Image (cartoon, rainbow, N blue to C red):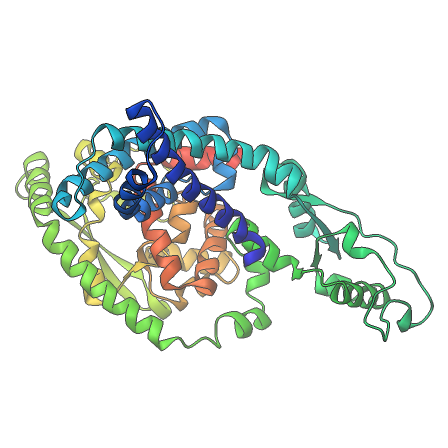
Length: 466
């Protein structure tokens, strides 16, 4: 919701301004003097073509992730990676279309991207350390209390860079009658709006004290204070949903079961078919090379592909295709097997294929057949699902949609090997089940490029640090 997304929007608008500022600095640095306006506008017209590219690169490297960029080391690493990728992408773009663009910048291009990343990095430091935490901080009060609310409060107190501060609910005037806070002239008798900027409500707990609940909610409505449930606040803050709340019948009816977006489903299936078909053709040389490498490394008689029954849409079973990265019979270790620091079942070649995610290429065939989608919850082994559905409450909810090659849980969480980790992963899967859209799918696909280069150990470390 906009209560949260305006932060990323402001970051982007600042980036856009700094992009043109970087261009002006580059042109002046090259000439060592001020530049004519028409000369600057000529370059603006051409360089603006690059705007969607650098914005996509910034998103992929995590430049809009407030938790990530709050840490200086992460911010600098993201900036350096973004600089290299943007420079390569911009060079390819300009030199591929130099006839249409009318310019083939060299020094100007390098300097523009250098100044852009320098300014964007400083902008994020100021944004998290000054603007959000001091100037535009939002005071949040909580009506009702439970373990989840306490978790949110603790995180907000420890994370001022998120732009929230926990405020105590003030005592409202008690006139003994409703008109004490709800006046016929359209004005409230309290100054609640000066004390808090947002009211987060745990409806069930608040009902235990109906008079206080009624007075606060009425006053907040009159003073136009945004009101949000603690579950929605949690969802927007963390990008996941607690399954113990999401599995309630009321949540299913209001957030999932009533949805029937046939247009989205048709467009998504069309895009899946096109992407899978194009992907299979483009990766054919890589597929042949990997196939030959597996045969050469493990013997001509050894299987190059790995087949396993997985659980898909509405619990239907299907056979997933992957390149074999383990020795034959590795699945005898059983479901939810937790290997050591170095899993001896993975072959040397298989370790490389996994790190480069090349073992996932054959799944495009599953997408083309309709067993899977490009984006969705990761399909799990049937033997694991039997265990998890017995022990993880409402685990079956992730099967309401087709599984995917990549997904929201994959880019936000690490691979699981226990019931506790699977339960936490379910929080993210349910977020996608509720909020799935083409825009979210595109964002997941873009962030998957970054996830390819991230180790599970780094994801675990980042989660613990957060």
